[in-house]
Image (cartoon, rainbow, N blue to C red; front, side, top):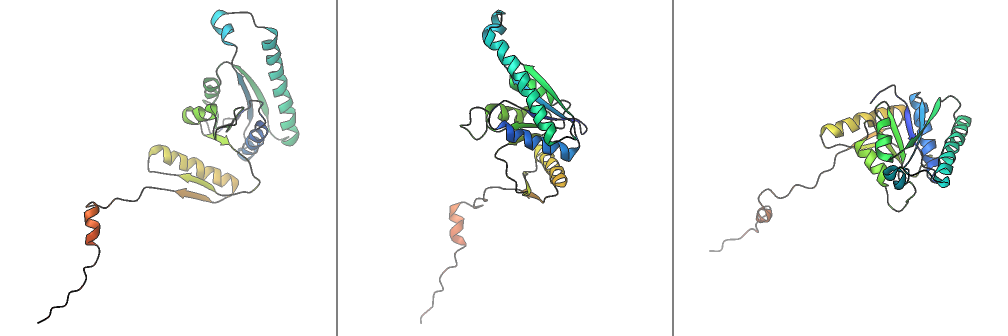
Length: 208
């Protein structure tokens, strides 16, 4: 991870991409960083395995993807004129190609659901969050409320690194930082039989 690297925003053309784009552009402005808009798509399996010639639909998609990035840059520049924005059109598997861009990036921004929209987090976002070489922001529904930054820690090296990133994010956004540590309740040290020992015995009176 480079502290002076760009903010990479992964675009997939889904309806959620507009929110991902806006969140990433705002994050880049806070960091005073350059922006790379990346679009990755996989060629048909027949082309990669059998070296078939591309059909017109494949060529049309390539042209549409380039136009999509160009239109997105125009829109982003009009809303954030101070940012320096470039594009990358990647041919091949999304996860490894986007992961390669994180070698020199300071932040990767991806949408939570992509085209599927059925699960809380999509396959691409989940893999990149686990394997990227820089911090990853998985953008869900964006609100205008500036709430605190919350980070969960368990004492492991990775959680301490997450806390460091969270502290930087809270400083940039000028919001509180909430550090959370959760653990299950401790079991009774002597088993369930020991619990009864904690109950006071009833007092007995002696008669003569």
